[in-house]
Image 1 (cartoon, protein in one colour):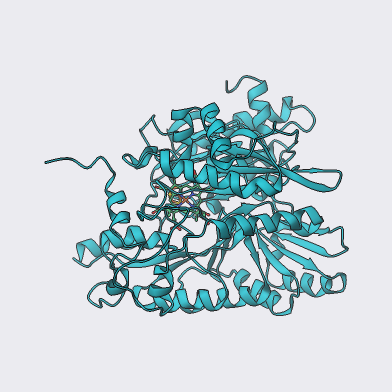
Image 2: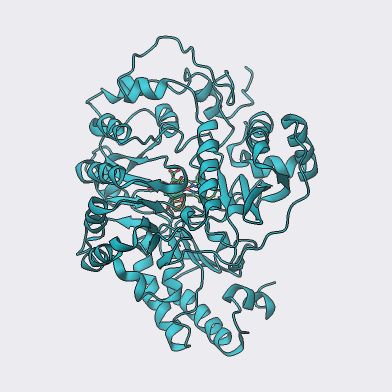
Length: 554
Ligand code: SRM
Ligand code: SF4
């Protein structure tokens, strides 16, 4: 008997008839709230994950009940731009079908949790009716394209959003399975789809693929954490093109040193007209050379390391028929988001709001979800989601500011005014109770940990210090923890790896400082380091840079 050299998921994809599987039939099965394992893999390409409520998993097992299955749905909202009418429609879906409100993700889109199987089709149709989609929000394809927020601050930002949309559309799967399953399109017996980029063997890419575009001087989207990172180069007020970085990614598997986070390698510069050809070369090189046997090593970063950056650079040029020019100079100055009002060059205004871990959910006295809904009813600009799980009320006419300010205050959306430096710069991934991979709490731990850290920082006179804090419930890295000046990466319930020393601009990763420790050790380690930082830091020196300069970490 011959052993297939491919990973089992490759078989599921290639026999799926372009992502159909038996999803449509299984949605109709009333006996279970779940769908079969193979279909759960295909469902990701349609933008949804089957999950179960882990808070009650053991209890249900004891009662011999099937897990409390429900579905997480992720939208594809390129660049995180949402007009008010669309916001209202997406919010209404959350109210009708989801259990935990709207969740802004670290890739500037929405997730909804707790959608029951029997409602999934209506939910997807609702998203379609809102002129949005979920196709390719997850799965082994190019996903949501992200970029720096606030494009209206200059005409170059607007231009960047155009490229976000072009890249996003260019890499959309062409299969009609999505329309057939979710939107009432006719189910065809044999697939006749054409996938010019992903291939007609229905194998799609070996693994997920991510594109990000940063606009210096801000690296608010952690551009080097993407498979394909693009740094816009603007000279004399005009978009000249993009520096291209390949092979970024954050994920690692606990206990497997052959997996690791990696920052993208800069391989050259392209003019705007050549961008799509170069991006397609990168995607198809990964399609053809990525590891389809071992999913742990299937991301582009491992392909680049296996074949070499120089080889990859050469191949991009050969495949695209374009010459990569020398990388152009650029300078990042900050990560994180800008809060409060800022005025665009066209005289319109933008209000950056802090949303704790991106959760807009009227719960425990919070009225944030209602508040944004009320603003959406009167707002004439648009909303922008950020890659740090926050949001911007963008493109506000000067005369509308006061009305918006009133609503912001009434519904408690003005938290950004009082936040400490570390709170303003923290990200926490979803983790428990929905994430099937979580080893520790993250989003639910942030409100417990933050006051304790704030008390320490306050004691050392560091309440305003803008420190990048990243919490992740496991080493997969959804909060991009390896780019945190301080990061906690979950190892088990209540236990985390403490990692320290990334820079403030997303160009240097942190290192492991203490392994698998509990809160008392986390706090005492940081207390001592905060004390040293307060006493010895140089003007404007970030916490991570201080730790490197003083040799605390190598
Ligand atoms: Fe992620 C898997 C949540 C951004 C790396 N991620 C998951 C899943 C779907 C768990 C699963 O596979 O069953 C999580 C669902 C949790 C839940 O209950 O909602 C999940 N990831 C998230 C979000 C919602 C975190 C958040 O709190 O905002 C982010 C959604 C982004 C989006 O809108 O598309 C999210 N995930 C990221 C990022 C950050 C980024 O892309 O900038 C990363 C690191 C960058 C990267 O891809 O390398 C990331 N997620 C992963 C990985 C590790 C991938 C790897 O190469 O090893 C997994 C696990 C996997 O793919 O096997 C994962
Ligand atoms: Fe889940 Fe781990 Fe991602 Fe957190 S980092 S959302 S725990 S997969």
